[in-house]
Image 1 (tube, rainbow, N blue to C red):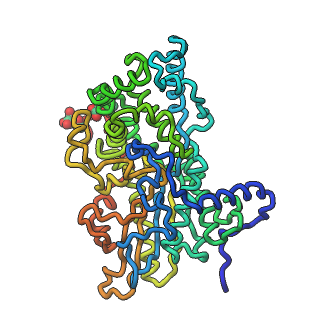
Image 2: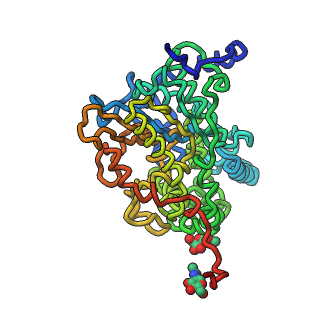
Image 3: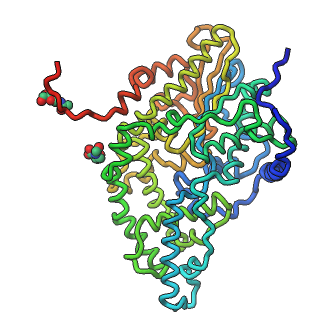
Length: 491
Ligand SMILES: *[C@@H]1O[C@H](CO)[C@@H](O)[C@H](O)[C@H]1NC(C)=O
Ligand SMILES: *[C@@H]1O[C@H](CO)[C@@H](O)[C@H](O)[C@H]1NC(C)=O
């Protein structure tokens, strides 16, 4: 008997008709990929974690018909039997903190306008006055939430993955999807949008129901897994709440590269250089990135940097962003990556189980596992696995030497970035060890093994390589604060 897919609609869609119509029209829109990219600026390559997914996947902007398929992906006698995906939420609004800083900068420009009567002495276009008049459309309620473009990021990713791995995302497997998410709205909503994208894959033209009405239900929240950094006492004390842990970030903000930008921007905006600081410059830069990612428009805030040497300014601001990620999420401190051991082990527990089930000729109980989190979820895990490691640490003082660094958050964790583990069963392989193989994909491109540069690994070899992390990294121990040595007379 054919088992009814459990993820299908349980209740009537009638009450959701209006929403459905809206979704349908947005599906219609998103299927027509924009051939042009009017919002792109020369600054786009430097937006770090605020980079659009399409900016690291050029095939998407080109608007090709069939999804691009990495030629390194295994096919033939090896069948994918399980997929575990870690997915960063899609495009989001700025956080309340970023909006507050933007208001501060905006206020500064408005004050400047009233001080000199708004008259431009040169008669040329006065950017400061133009920005002062520019309506700030960001409001506090937006606080980091997923935007419509972010839902679209997720639906399209779902459609591409479903056509890349049709046997895993089969209609029969639909009811066995497992979705896990961080508790943040933008992640929960990303999971829901992903499900709606899959719905669209199976029922083209039929409006997707609310995820609450899908029997597999909405994504399940698990912050211990997806926000492990909030649950690691050692990380919180030594890095997150430690004023000196980000020393290099602060030092770079007052260093010569940033000072140079401050002077130039002060001149462009005709404000005293002392009224500006690196944080305000950075918020103008972020606003340029948000207006592009959210609205697809080239913001006047980009002009602050575009006037001369946009590339040079972009590179410095990109470095500032990367420095923070490096010291807070990457190789800067060991605890940053060690705090993600549980997540790493969780992935391998899923893979282990699938291998066992295949060996017993049973169906794989969870063929597709989708986990929605943050850039802060992905970066520590990639660092734990040894990816994007530069020979020298990123510091406030080696900006020049790090021009060609590997650790570039814009390339690694743009919006909707994804790290995918694919387990293959290779039927005809004779030695048992060769029957199970793994490939990893980062942003839909095959990610060669950090230690061998091979594009595929026998599952046993992979586990063996990461033996230490799999066997000797216990969160309870890693995240425990070093105890004060009070009792030295312990027996
Ligand atoms: C804060 O960070 C600095 C620099 O890494 C370190 O030396 C210090 O021990 C940290 N403080 C705490 C309370 O962990
Ligand atoms: C704890 O105290 C004992 C005795 O004073 C000393 O030998 C030992 O090195 C201390 N351990 C640490 C971690 O400070």
